Image 1: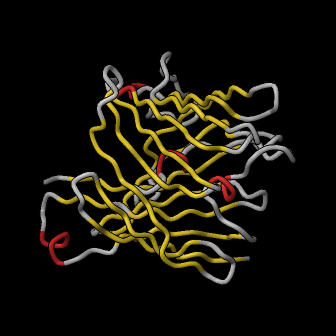
Image 2 (image 1 turned 90 degrees about the horizontal axis):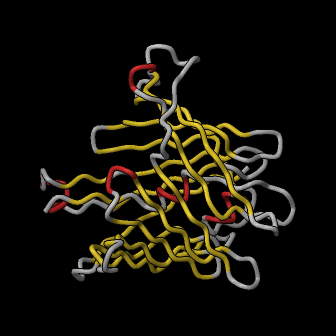
Length: 237
């Protein structure tokens, strides 16, 4: 069965402002301490290695001094395949992303629109990618009139992030839902929007922490009871 496993990808694509009452990317991922980089690696058993339909992506993140993602790298079994560069305005709100291939060749660029609530929390973020007809000029780009991706952020009464929903224009009948508990991602689901049917679901359970009390090993249980493991390699400043 063909499958795609990308841990916390959606939340990593969207960043909040770092005013004192707002959440940094490091905090949103549930990390503590002065983190410089983080890489999620899937443990590939023999079945996964031999399954030609299996498509697994490892994510590596680099953070700036404000605790926001500056660069995301994605790896397959063949090596580095994608690089995403994050660009911020003076208040550290994400305003654009630049996409490169594994050789750092320009692929695309997007602009970001942010909506904050009265408490200054990010509640909606929309990404508009550049249209293909303008990609020969990476400076004077023409962007889509409709968002390619929308993310909604939900908070509890203590203003802590507890869930976010991702809607992708390429798969408009489904949404990706990620749930958090005490800052840690505990569940990721793909849900059919019309009737709420759960198409896929992954439950994350941390089974090992480092000295900073950051999770470095997860057990992942799929909706079909398939069990796998992910390791987190964390580098501190």
